[in-house]
Length: 104
Picture 1 (cartoon, one colour):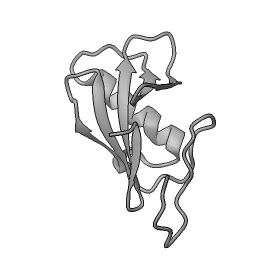
Picture 2 (tube, rainbow, N blue to C red):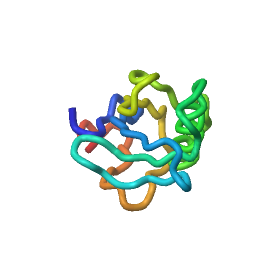
Picture 3 (tube, rainbow, N blue to C red):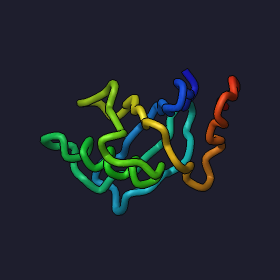
């Protein structure tokens, strides 16, 4: 799977997180993953919660519209962003147009 794909109006991302970073940030695409730096430690789900909040903010959605599909206890994760309203600068993704079959 490439690092992102559209599933209807939803964006599915393959993410590799770096917990305990100095700041939350998108660190670009590395291989087939979007690298995300998170300040929270990987303890008791804190890094996952912070990842969800950070991704929601970056893609202009509510936290409830971001779901962790795979990788709850791993650094590599699959995240679904329901109907994002924006794409962060620097990512080569276009928002889908209504009725458009090509969503890349």
